[in-house]
Amino acid sequence: MIDSLIEKIIEMQNPTCVGLDTAFGYLPEEMREDISTFEGVAERLIEFNMNIVDKVCDIVPAVKVQVAYYEMYGYEGLRAFDYTVNYAKGRGMTVIADCKRNDIGSTASCYSKAYLGKTEVGGKTLQAFPADMLTVNGYLGSDGVKPFIEDIKKYDKGIFVLVKTSNPSSGELQNLKLENGKFIYEQMGELVRSWGADSVGKYGYSEVGAVVGATHPEEAERLRRQMPSTFFLIPGYGAQGGSAQMLKVCFDKRGLGGIVNSSRGIICAYKDPKYSGMSYFEAARAACLDMQQDLLSAIGKIGG
Image (cartoon, rainbow, N blue to C red; front, side, top):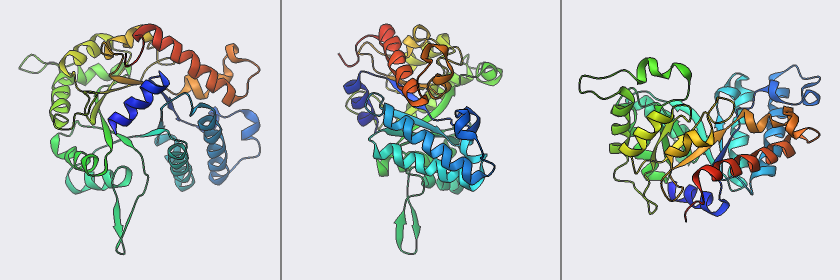
């Protein structure tokens, strides 16, 4: 799966991932009028996401669908999540389910089946939410990650394990030092590197990736040196304060090594005076093209 994603990034010369963190309140006012049920919300979320995907799928390789923005609308919200995942896949995009799942043993296995694997029912093998990749919280240790690793090997999928997150308070735990002198995030990075050591693809990157925030460039640079074969999912660009120059350290000399997520900066771009007069989906496309140029100005030609 990681080779497939990298090939799309090279072909499009765009390491951008559109975050479909689609809260109902982000939709244009006219789409929210006369809606007072979760069912109505779901229909509008589906319409909004479809139009965004249709407008960017030829220039952007991937979407990240954050499940929390759908769970808060109950069953109907999850229906919109499922529809969005399937629709984006149908349009040829790599779909990252941003669920940050983790537990131990059989429970972790259930989470993995839901998003990466398959579930047996009545002699049939069925898929629940058929994402290509999944964000995983590895801070419970190896037994909470092993079921996901087994499924990505079995079904040609990928995971991104939280290592150094983009939120301001991440350092409260992740930047504490251990007795051996390493930061906690570095220890997690070493685990992630070891978990993916036997699944490195032709471009030199593993199916077990890492979430590394753009808002912490010093830590990101340390992790890139420590984890040369680990592909990064990079949140924090744009609305959270991360810039192209800050995240440049996540990429190798070929311009490979990561994909950069932007959510509100793209799906809410229509609110930006810069894109005044555009529909929300036209503004989203324009924002993606601007982001592409910004990233390429920092990291250079990809795959060259």
